[in-house]
Image (cartoon, rainbow, N blue to C red; front, side, top):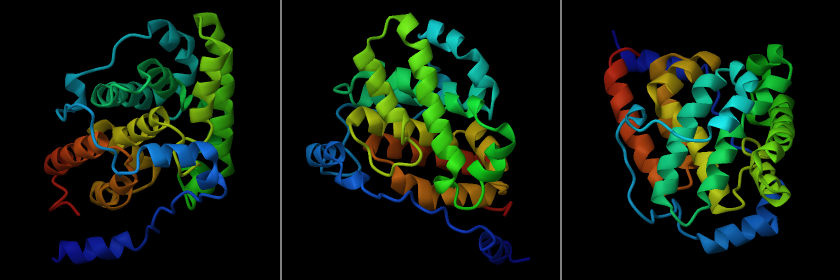
Amino acid sequence: MNTRTESSSREQDYPSWAAAESGDTAADPRAVRFAADFPVRPIPMEGTVDTRPICSTPGSGFEELWKQIEPETRTRGNDVHLPISAAYAERLCDAYPSADRELVLVTIILHDTGWAHVDESRIISEGFGGDWRKATIRFGHEREGCLVARRVLPGLGYSEDFIERVCEIIDGHDTRPVAYSLEDALVRDADRQWRFDRAGIALSASWFDMDMATYTDRLQREIIPELITEAAVAMAEEDLRRQRELLRTEVIR
């Protein structure tokens, strides 16, 4: 049996994930300034990055914030996605110490809380099907995530200016193709990074209705090129190598 031929045939059943359209965002002064400040892509590391399995360095801190958003973690696998993404964000902050660590970590914890405030019946059908980057519900979850941030952060002592910086990153983290700052880039990379952990692969493949071989091939071909930082690429490539070996995707395809 020619498994690779069958896999290639099966892959044709899944249209390529369309990239987010830039619209006017690439010309936004924030995007232009960020591109000028970091002209080399992926952005070279300032330090080093830990590429061991993410379970070896779980995230820490921000207990009060986690308690505040506990209800929002009960939707769309957020109780898996958000802690794993936050753990990756800590590693990215270690690799880029010039970034505002607090901003990155608060934002990654909050970035997908908006999924809890949209029509749950539409999350999988629209948010993970077809041309999912343009789905109305994706824009909706970003807006709702900003509302969550504005609701919970003042009581935790965060300033209005800090909260607006958090919301600037949340608003567009899925639907805007360009980053506006290094912190924005680290949040975007951490949000994608979790897909390379085995828990992320299992959940995400089920959302997109893909088998493991097809999904991991997609990660290699379409998600790694989207990563903005060198540290994220290094972690993703090592994670993907491990998961492919574990899941035996070279033969189960």
